[in-house]
Length: 138
Image (cartoon, rainbow, N blue to C red; front, top):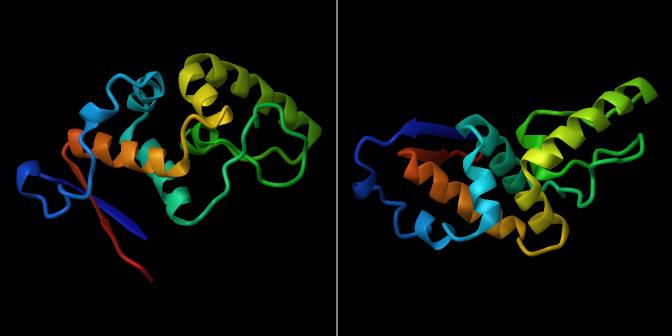
């Protein structure tokens, strides 16, 4: 389970030494795409990383069946389609997201970034936004 809270004094966080500064990512084109995501969307990706979810690569036009979604589809809350009708809708949404998040998707699909990179970037963004992640293991 993951909780967040507004960190009113980000400089005093006990986690600052573990969270990379957003500045190390600022020249990465894929990072700019991550900045477009809301806090909730970032947390969806983060939660899936922490739960060892295997994100798909080149998952924009997937066949029906297993759950294979890329980080952006997870962030946006889209489910894997389970009918041909839903597959058509999925492909339309995927095309739109693919255009908007091209730099991130390419970096992910071509393995320029890893789940570890994404996790660090998300933590840096949340810190930049003065959001602190508090994790509880159940």
